[in-house]
Image 1 (cartoon, rainbow, N blue to C red):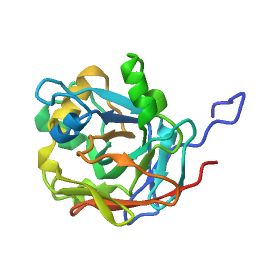
Image 2 (cartoon, helix red, strand yellow):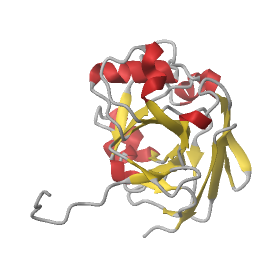
Image 3 (tube, rainbow, N blue to C red):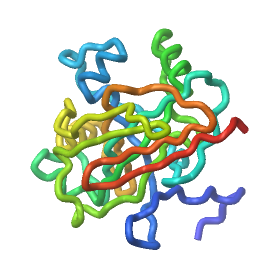
Image 4 (cartoon, rainbow, N blue to C red):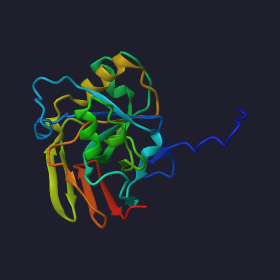
Length: 232
């Protein structure tokens, strides 16, 4: 056993549906602007942009139902509902027809965003980390093993704030499909078991404030609920 000079941090993990076991999280990859309507609402042309990626730290994960405090340094705190897939088998240069062999499970997640910090960074040509990679910024519902997932290519995806629908689309509207995303990502770096991939959000992103309750889900897959608490 390795003798560390300080206590090793706990292993980040997410719940597994119907099990007491948990899925260890190694890295979180996120796809930017992967629905055409969302790309347009962010001022970009979806017909020209190839897929691009950013990351969140593994310990940004938050379980379903946990209250997320309003984060510091922002006055424009946004929700983004997304399909999430979990890698169970590592690989590089994964061909499209082999992608499903590498996915352990799938669920729904919320890519929480400090939008004002993200846009300020974008305008200055700087990384998005302060807008995307902060504490408790990746809410992930329990993973559903692929043996229980009927498909990842279609199905209603939605989000509501205080019961009012704000985002609604279908997974068939993804610009880059799950198979394409994993193939392209694995050409840049080797994917390993424990990696999560958040696949992009539909149009309708917007701000929440303390006291709001975010709910959402993906048809036939999972639901998610996140109360927003006061700033700490």
